[in-house]
Image (cartoon, rainbow, N blue to C red; front, side, top):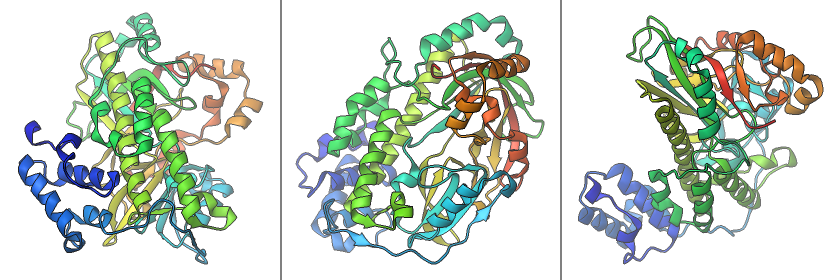
Length: 467
């Protein structure tokens, strides 16, 4: 199949009106025509270029046809929008959610493009959408509804080895975490890493992505600050789990991070463009959207998906390096991501579903919902609840802001909590102290209609950004 893969070099002689149209063509061929010969791919593209109007209703080729039929440019005149009077949304775990998160969600549902919404039990106030907020919009993507850390995700590798390994190899695991993980501005890894993500043709499609390629290479395999972590711990799989793994106890490696500086730059750039093009009242200004019929919307969609794949690549590198360092191969890997937008069908209508700090939970879809550094997290499978737009919480959720945690939690208190739980912490700060988070058991009890618990993960050696 590799010889049939369409790359940018194959399109050098094709007269595209824009880099976006070229990128859309590559994406369509990769997704819908992967088993078609290279010659046939080029012929299909030429046919659309010759008569794009004829393909505006085509199931697979419509995005390319739309990109070729004179859609507005980035600097087009702005449009002023009035808000709807109200909009309804589902709430799970209402007693655990602060009023300011409700107010943010209410405002988001008043956008003219908003159709459906939901609040997860871990929800708390954020920027734009509340963290734990889910919003379905019609043919529009909201860059700040996705968030700054595009594609932030959880990844869990499960090793078929008894949990005693953690106690017997504590020094080696501590050393491996310090050697093979880097956070925030600590710098890049001091050894060479590589991943096929760096060869993706999308990096050549826009000026911004071309500029970000060097940063992506530099930060590959590293993690962000805040609540991002890499940790070893114990995994317990339930007797009735559907993951195809025997019930019992295992060793696990869990990581939480996103798209680093690349995602932040994409979010900042396209939020500014959206605010220029889409004029909204001050209280919802940050929720300005981009139409997917617009060139800027297509550029953001392409960039967001690339950033999401880059976030996965960072986790791939982390897990590969640490697995090799400890001499073990995982028997299973579970991943999921949040801070993203998906095209999904709900109630017979295609919506752009934004999950800002919420886990996708379609029927049978696997995910991880962590607690805090001293409480267990949960391996789950989705139940496909339409009221939540097939979503669940992405963690326990904060009950204190980072400032509140700094002002009220003593480091000695956090140290005592860690010691009682038998957890070793490398780095970290009181901003991420367990007491700053909601009770994960209470949060999980509010979403038994959303997910099935397949197993759990308890942290033992935790690596975070330096305090």
